[in-house]
Structure formats: C-alpha cells, structure tokens
Length: 42
Image (cartoon, rainbow, N blue to C red; front, top):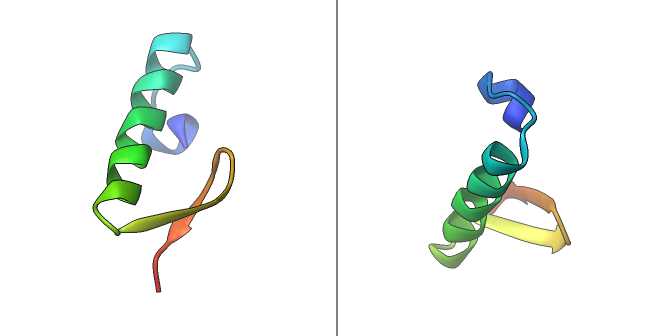
C-alpha cells in the first residue's frame, strides 16, 4: 500500500499507513480478513 501511495518503505510510513487502514476498519469502510490484509467492505 505504501508503494501505491508513493511512500518510501520506511517503518514510520508503514506504521502510519497501517494505522490509517485500521481506522478505516473501525469506521466500517474496510474489512481486515487476516492480519495486514485489508479489503473494501461490501
């Protein structure tokens, strides 16, 4: 996901992106099937 957004693959970027994705899961926009595997909620 970081690469798709044009971010360098640094731990701070990866953790920031993961936090944003987890927030979208809490808002019922995404689902997390497995750890680190996100998809759009249908």
